[in-house]
Length: 125
Image (cartoon, rainbow, N blue to C red; front, side, top):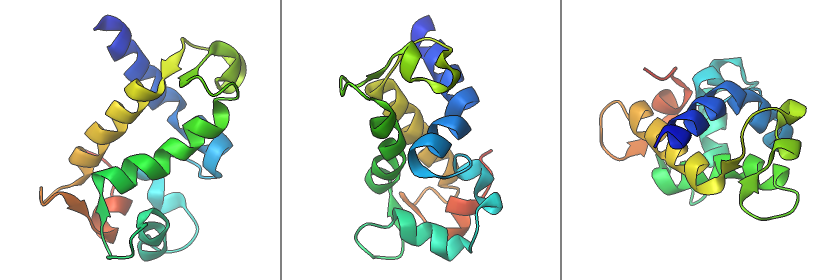
């Protein structure tokens, strides 16, 4: 359990670097206001089925792409040498995606199970 919390804390600290390296984004959605374009354009990047809203599966899948690109050996774990700056403990895809799922639910302010452009671009609480 402590390793899981440490992994989540590490991901929060390294989130911007992970995504910047893998997706070309400067940070997790908490910094969406810093991205070029509008919240609607940001939503379109996540919205794989084009329904105008982002489900948890779309959110997790989109943000997992950076992790997968960094996982050079494809074992589902970012080892120390795959982490930004080669620092920190290994992080598994499972732990990373669990953290993303929690982030999704924090962003879903109206608790309808979907993120609209406003929720997706809002800082997390």
